[in-house]
Image (cartoon, rainbow, N blue to C red; front, top):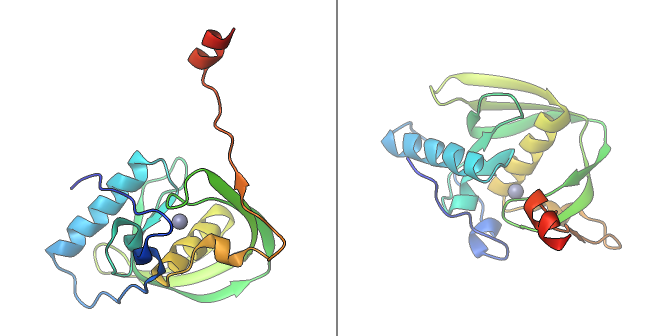
Length: 167
Ligand code: ZN
């Protein structure tokens, strides 16, 4: 199990559609753990298998103060409402944008033990599910920007040491 490289835009693997997982085997364990390790190392909220170069429908999500979750073959079955959110992506480092996401999302998936799960999500979890399932379909959050909107460059924040050096 390892921290692996995250593929960045415009790598073509991010535009491919991931395939459904048909059986649970050892390789799936490894993919799940690599996703979790790599997501945690990058301090991300979620990571999809495409982003580590694997075209299988597996995602990891970890909300602040919670344990990581892995979902296999996740699928949105229902969604409600619209809201504007600021979003960023580990595959598009240094940028963020404001897009429209759902207020409520209902999704089904299998967990790592191959059990059926039904996820009723709102807030950050709903946003993360939509973002990561988009990845499995080759969609990036920038695709949801209206034409007149632009990505915003994130200014790197100075850490305390650098501030002291500047003073
Ligand atoms: Zn992303």
